[in-house]
Each structure stands twice: as structure tokens, then as C-alpha cells.
View 1 (tube, rainbow over the protein chains, first blue to last red):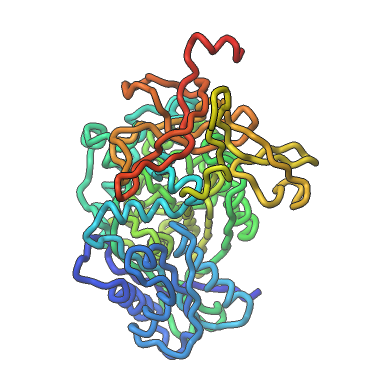
View 2 (cartoon, rainbow over the protein chains, first blue to last red):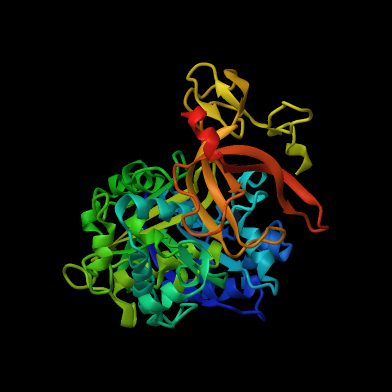
Length: 395
Length: 143
């Protein structure tokens, strides 16, 4: 297989953009990624375009990728439409990576875009219930807030997590988000503010939950041996790409039985590293307290010790293993089909030392190894899709 | 949603008839599924599955009181994952439970009742599977 680098990344800031169409959000991200890559646009050979809800929310049920790419000025090249619920964009990225790693293409584009503000919040929230087996869960009213709430309730009972621990994750990530110009919510929140915000799905309060949002993110991927021709920036290699569907119980699995654990192990093995090598991580905290569970499932700490990491500040910007320096899903925002590539963009910026006020410090200065973890949907008791990517800065 | 009645659950039609969910079981490995599967994930065979009534009783695996709900659902209401006695983990709503915190607990015994899940956009009831706590005077018979 060819070695693959991320030559460039770009984003449209996440937020509420009632005047902008999906293709305009995507256009900004696509051209920002191409400028960042320094590559001649005509060199792009294919595009893998992720969008989750454009069918039900915008009525654009098919060919969303082609609509986006033609608007951006690209014609003739193969365009593949990708959907994997909230893991849509990381799945599009993986397909792009595969196409270069396999030798089929040299330079390709991965895009994730979502438009959730359509003037009818109830419809947008209801659309999310379709990321389940609709017949047995979505139609029964299953809400992802409730799913996370139920999972977290079990963890609280089993491991002694306190409401303050849940809120502390939000305090940390909202501080990170306040430093991120691409973030949807930039107000830092205190533990007290989080706990006294409205109860949404007991024990999840409003500020612990991600909101609906608009936004887009994109990446240009390229064969490593060609990359030097175009870019003078530090090169960031895709060291591993792992994707699984669920096979256990999200609620009841212990950390080492979880689908995230299995997917992360696939990735660590591919890259020949372990969780102790990771210096920065972007993880799927659609409800911020889920971050605690992910510390254990990604191997950042042993079972039962997640609360120690948050209580001791180990996952903050200056901590041992900074998690969600972008602000995570609750602060940076979670336009579902764009999230995975926003995570990847953040890690690429962090590994290049370009993350500004929210730059993390690795063991020897700028971090060398980064991880992204992105979950999507819920089927048969478990996540529908989990993607883990590992990135390495090359010197 | 009408199509799931008598395909995914049985509605009692006469006195003494009890509701149940329509699952299936793999004859080879014995695992029980709800909703019924088209192939057994352990044996990777599609010809070993037989229909099985399930879900009359179960225990609460976890629950959450929802204070924000999609259209057609009462607010607040309780969503839960139920571990059926036969094994499957099923999403459902809890009925006949006080909305006070700690009115129910993880591990509580519950029983199936068929009833209104929500109202459709025209206000008509949509029927599905719900669970309610097993009354205290009947818990003993369950052990």
C-alpha cells in the first residue's frame, strides 16, 4: 500500500448560517483545504463527499456530492457519496485514504458538510432519530440524548462518576472552544453553570449536549512521495485508518469489550504504536460526559480511572493527553456529517503547530502523534459505525 | 407503523391472551433475538432461526427521564433499555412510573404492555411495546 499524507485541511466555521446553502458551506471548506495543500486544483482526481441529513432536511436525497463539487467548480472527476450517520465525514476520509493507499489515485479530496438549521428545530432533531433502526427505535422515539444519558447513568452507578465530573468535561471543552475561531459556541462555562442549566435527559443537562449546527470541513490527501512537490508545511501522515460497525452493547459493555476499544486496537496495530504514544486526541463527545467513557475505551487510562483524568486536569490543553482541544462536539459544534473531518482538521493543525491559542504541547514540543475517534448512529444496541484515525507528523 | 403489529408484537385479542414480542432464536447456538434476525451473527447461518415469543418480562438496563421530546410524545417521559429475560436488549418507554427521581432503578423487574407510544401528526395513537414495573405483590412469584 502507498503511504498517504494529509496535504491540506480547511473548514467553514461551525454555527448557524440561515442564509447559506449546503454547497456554499462545503465550497468554503473545499477551497480552504486546497489553498492549505498548495496543490494545483486540477491535480485532484476524485472526491469522497460525506453528508448525512441533506435528503430528509433539504430534500436533496441523491447526488449531494456532485451538487457540491459542481458548485465548487469540479467536473468530470469521480464523486462518491458517503453516509455513516455522525461518522459520515471520517468514513469519507477513510474512502479517500483507501483510494490513494491502494494506488488508484494520487491526489483526492474528502469533504464533510451538513446543514441542520432549516428553520424547524423539531424536524432537525427528529431527523437524527433516523440514524437508528427506525422501525424498532426511531419510531419509538429513541433520542440520542437519552441513549447517552442511559449509558452515563450506568457508568455513574458502576464507577462513582459524580454530576460534577460530567460538568467538568464541559468546563474544559468550552474553555478550549472559546479559543477556537471555528467553534460554534465560544462562551466558557463553569461547572456551576453546566449543572444549573436545564435538564434535558436526566442526568444530561442542556450544556452537556451538542446542538444542531451548520458547517463543513475538507481535506486533500496525497501520496507521500509526491507531497513534497507541493507543500512546504510539515507533512502529516495517515498512520492508521480503522472502521467498525457495532457488535456489543453500548450500555453494558466494559471498556475492553466496546466497539471503540476494538476499533482503536485495529488502529494502534496498523500504526505500530499504543495509546501511550498519543499526544492529542479529538473524540466523539456528542454529550460531553461521553468523553470520560472514551478515555477508557481508547486506552488512555485503565477501567474506572476516567474521572481521575478529568479531576486532575490531565486532558486539558496543558495536560498529559489533551482531549478535544477544538472544544469537541458540544463547543466546536456537531453538524453531523462534517464532524469527522473537523476532528481531522484540528489534529492536523495541532501536529503542525498551527492551532494558535489552543495549541497543545506534546512530550517534545509540538505533538507528533494524534488520534481522532468518531461514532455514528445506533443499531441493535450498539454504535452503528466507529472510526479511529491516527496521524503522525513527519520531519 | 401498522405493519409491525403481528410482525414484531402480538396484541391480545381476548381474555387471558397475553401480549408478547415476536423474536426468533438460533436452533444451533440458542441465542435469542428481538427484533428477529435474518441470519445468526454467531453461526453466520440463515437457516437455523425459528420464531419465538419473547419479552413478557425483563429488567431495566438503564433509563432516562426526557424533558425534551419529539413531536407526539408526552413531556416528560421515560426512555429505557430493557434486558428481556430471554436475552435481547430492547429500547422502550416506561409507563406507570412516577417522574420523581429514583422512582425506578437499574435492575428493576418490568413487564410488557402494548399501548400508545405517541400520537401521529393527525393526533391518532401509534401503538407499540411499552414496559411497566411489575407490581410489588407479584414480584415474589418471579423470584
